[in-house]
Amino acid sequence: MATGAYRPLFLSNFSLSNPKSLPLNNRFSVSVRSRYPSLPKHRISTSNPTLYVPRSGFTPRLLGGNLGFTLRASSNESDSVDEAEAAAEAEAKGQSTMPERFRYLLKEVPDRPVRWPWLIPVVFLVYAWRSVLWELSNWKKVFFALISFLGYLAKLGLAFIYQFIGDPITTFIACIEFFLYSLRSFYAGIVAFAPVNELTILIVLTSSVLAITEAVVPNAMNNQYHLLTLAGLIGLGALKGVITELFFWVLMVGLFCYSRFAKKRDLVSAALPSVATVVAVGEPWVRALVMVAYLGIAIVQHSKLALKGAGDDGGVVEREVPLPLLLVGVSIGIHVAAKWIRYRHLTWMIA
Image 1 (cartoon, rainbow, N blue to C red):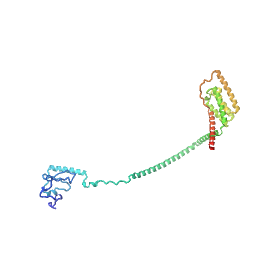
Image 2: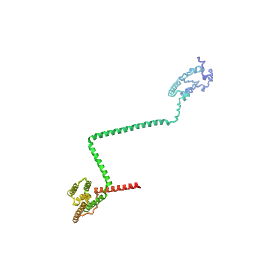
Image 3: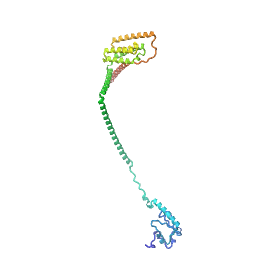
Image 4: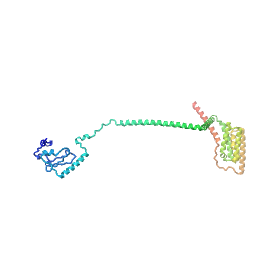
């Protein structure tokens, strides 16, 4: 294609024979920034025309061959153009080279909104809760299996121990059982068959003996509290038939001798445990004889102490009730309370 036959589109309305007919700013200027916005502006004038030529194929021949003017540039201006070209190229590398008209295509299209967004976490929560329940059920099964295994081990250890010391353990359990059944039968006997009249007479006679002793020798009951308890147990054994009559009298004499010669007590204090037991469990004539004899001994000893001037100093002494006497009183109270409860229960049923 001949050079003179090529006419660019933007120069078709102008005459090439007269360059002054071109619409120039200061006779002629061409701005390249409209086509390359990222580059600095450079103007081409007719007096000193300078054209920035990019590397995209836009050559001066296309313009200079048909326009009828030559492009001249000094050495200083060419250096500034090269520096501007390098800066523009570096800036173009860091930015997008897509034209402005296509930039809107790079925008991301927003996703469609979720209709029920809470359904998504609900599904995960249900699955997680199901997993938790499943794990808990597994732990429950493991726990009970471990407990049962420990129970088997305990049974095995007990069987191994019982093989060596089984007889003593069995005897000990039998003793505990006998004690519990004896206590139950004794309580049932008290509730059902307690002789209230005889127990009342026993308390009156024993209290009389204790009062006589305390009148002559103060604090005599507290000094031999354990002997009085032992004497009461001996009297209970005699009533139950566990101890024979002869052995009973031997034990009474033994208590008197121990208190008189071993503990070095006076005659009234030494005879107190034996006399109280005989008065409580003896025959009526034995009770009367022993009471009269003991009262005489107490009167004689009190008169001797009065002649010597060694009487009661008048101090207050806290006296403890002997345990057998206290148990007798409790037995009477239990029987009377049970009888009243039976009576009231029958009354309520009849009403």
